[in-house]
Length: 450
Image (cartoon, rainbow, N blue to C red):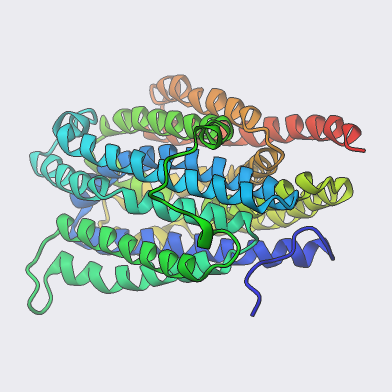
């Protein structure tokens, strides 16, 4: 069975779908991965969810650093493959992996050295929540290098037109996580009851398994990975090009996380249960944004290869088809979150006093799902054309607007719901702005391609 999809020739919809569907399935598996954690942690109690939610913010921050190598390596490798320059593609893949290992190891060291003050930023109310958050933080962020490698492998393979391996690797991690979560959290058989620590250990072990699957594939690959030499001196020229592409998106992701951490601190003023609602609600909401982000990764690879090959018409048609698909998906997600919020939220936190807050969160965020899906797909298209600054600027400015909006709206009768509305409104604006910006850029870019 051929693993690599031909993005340069043939009908666009089957070509794009052939790459996108495994990526979207991978995103859904990743969503199931996170929801499995929330399902079991929720059974421990809302305080445990709050601890994982606070510590998880720093894993989110780490993803921004990993994005530099992932996106830079993916886009540059995609351009090189489209131009039939396989040796350059190997160099970009090699450098991206090396950079990921170095930055992941450094992040893990810093996480363990400064765990207490970093968790203290959230001003959590319960000493037990603080202690659990520090434990989860030290374990998951201490071994974050595996997460870094998994993301970079995924990016390079997507650039190659191979999304199937990422799907299989992530599925293996999901199975391991599903099995280990209840065993380590509640203590089954010979294993002691570990609570939040058990969830962290299960997460890290599952990530290690995913890395193992990627390495097993890389050993057999005959296109790029067979020529990669991790111990080779890092090529500074390739690193500069990777950083040039990846840094704006990495900064965007890290600033986005910093803004979310500030918002989380505001949410904590409404109690630890509010933090738990935000954590669970955002994981439920990921049914739309993780899938859209995965589809955006496929669009990114499609754009990158066809730009390298100078395929003008495929670039334009590919974007139109991608947006059509995401419009349908966004409307579906809005319907599900708005019509069934109570049924869905109760699965994860059954506590009656928390449920009304969860229902409000899902209904308010449902309003913006269509715009968020369009934003993420368009950002992938922009990045695939080598332009990562416009989507980063749009995202940073409008996401930052959440903070003043939240300050104002939370002091109205909306209260906590005012914070949820600040998130939803900014997502709507981001979808509108980035799409208008991209269409103007695309028109100019296509005029320049002979």
